[in-house]
Image (cartoon, rainbow over all chains, first blue to last red; front, top):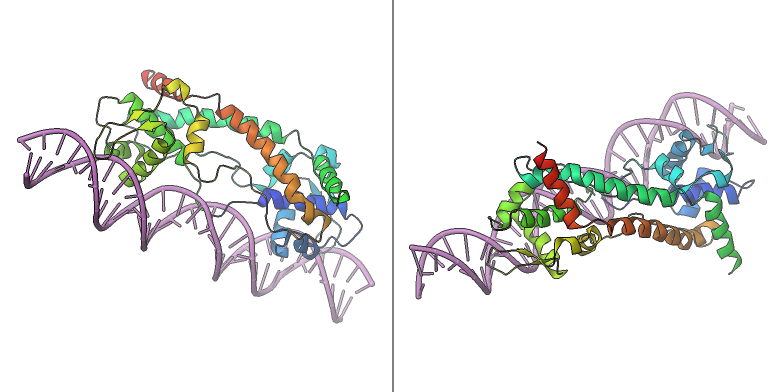
Length: 142
Length: 142
DNA sequence: CAAAGGTGTTACAATATAAATAACAGGTTA
DNA sequence: TAACCTGTTATTTATATTGTAACACCTTTG
């Protein structure tokens, strides 16, 4: 596959909706900022809506954040839009007749879980407010 | 793409070499345990060798760990065999004319770096000795 | 010293997942 | 009621990964 940048695009959508609140927030406009196509943006927005991070109505151009930006973490966004939420993957096809092949899957699953928890704990500390704050700070410094 | 399980297979190789030391450690034998093919195993072993985690000689069937198992961390293995070492990926094509599109890449790169560091710190705490210990413990409990 | 079998390496095919694109039913606004 | 939007689905294209094959060269063994 290609590498997924869905998370980055989803954050982009939310940041755009927040920063340009009151302006043109159509999927086409957001797609121009991401340089993606509107259909993909709508799909992302649909998933964000299902997770309650975004509120929108069919036919109407007025997406809004589902809750304050400082209550939306990167982890919330990640969980709402990634089909595969795991960073590391075990090899599910190993020889059960072998001491290694028969046990390594369970072993690595536990290890990978720990790594995942560490990464997710960090993601939970970053909020959409932090991200838009940083974006605006960088913009101001130009 | 498919999800990579190279890391899992690389750990498998090292664990196999360690646990079956003295037995048949040919790439074909290891491939049977992984249920992969010998060529892929040899490719993995070549990268592990380049990183000093494994020592082997062309034509000879006697791979050995490059250093004690408690001095080989999961992070060492990860870095030796993954081409793409990053878990999260920014969207490199965003509109620079937009406040969001023009700054989000730098912002997210920093955020993702932090997440990566958290995950890698955890990976650095797990050694090959821990993993083989767990594999053998599970085997004994059968 | 020759045969058998292994390693290290490269090239190419097959497979899986993601993004891009297109299409359309139905809602909303003016 | 016309124009435009959203939400959704299907199809195509791009790309990373694994599978497979091939082969030069090294090593072991009879």
